[in-house]
Image: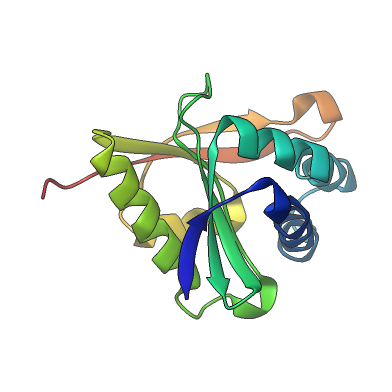
Length: 160
């Protein structure tokens, strides 16, 4: 297992993993319109743009991409994490925790004292179990005609 920063040549694998994860894990709770929008946002072009402007950390087992997490250092958003995605058949095996711990250590080394995220309902309890605290609930994707709850969460990073 190793964690690397994504390169352009990884974009196809990253996009495929994220789209498959969205379709498999989020289609049960989100409308078709939201799933369609999310898959477009994780297409090849958007993934290449994200690689250029931000940092995507990739967890690899040999040449197999297991998961990704994005550090939004250039985003105008109010949070630093842009999605944790794990290959569907690898969920529940500690890979997400491995990536999240790496991400938090990276953020702490950058001088960030707290991380804010927007969580889906699907991932809410996972983040809560990792020390993230619910700040407020927003209604997202109103423009798609199906407003859906998104949870703003935060974790204060411990010193040391």
